[in-house]
Amino acid sequence: MSTHPTAVAGFGSAADAYERGRPSYPDDAVAYLAAELGLGPAARVLDLAAGTGKLTRLLVEGGAEVVAVEPVAAMRAALEHAVAGVTVLDGTAESIPLTDGSVDAVTVAQAFHWFDAEAAIVEIHRVLRRGGRLGLIWNVMGADAGWLAALRELVHGSRGSVPAYGVSPWRKAFRATPLFTPLRERTFGLVHELDEHGLVDRIASTSYVAALPDADRDRLIRQVRELVRDLPRPLRVPYRTDVFTCRRT
Image (cartoon, rainbow, N blue to C red; front, side, top):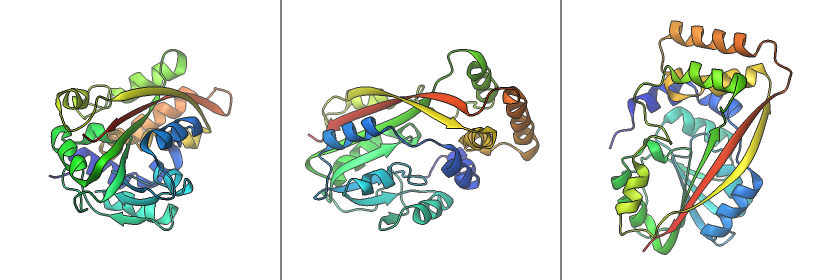
């Protein structure tokens, strides 16, 4: 399977902005994920579509042996720079470069909506040991009112039909599969404080923004800067962190 062209173009050109501008995951969400997946020093974990290693480094800090798989070369390079002691492999969710039953758990952070869900579920089932666990996590930026709502409208005008967490058919694939138990869902809160440059990096690291023609992307970034010009600093951006877990049947 090939990686979505917008992911390749966008994340390939914006890996540094992704590392600078994206928030980490809340401590309580990561602790819950680790408990649900049985992570610890004896566990071998696959962090799939690991990006720049935002979740990978937290799994390492928890003591697990971590293998990271990421299809975009620039993201792999950023991950290897940011996280020491992790095996980093080129691969996709639909063709994982690991042997059958070789990991105790699989995590996917901020990425499952990019996958061919049915094919990815089969592959994840294959590499998990009997009774192994799968965890999915997303940070979702709040945009209910005020400047954040205006920011969402501004940025989402460029999205088109690119896959997104809230509109992907991935949930349907999990409801239909006999390979995993039903998903369990928990939600946590997060506030990301950042300056104007950090907000620009956050927006510039959005795949479909990074993949825009230079003139269109530069115009959008100017509009973002204008939107927040007079706001107090630091800018406080609320997120909802959604965590899903299930078990290999």
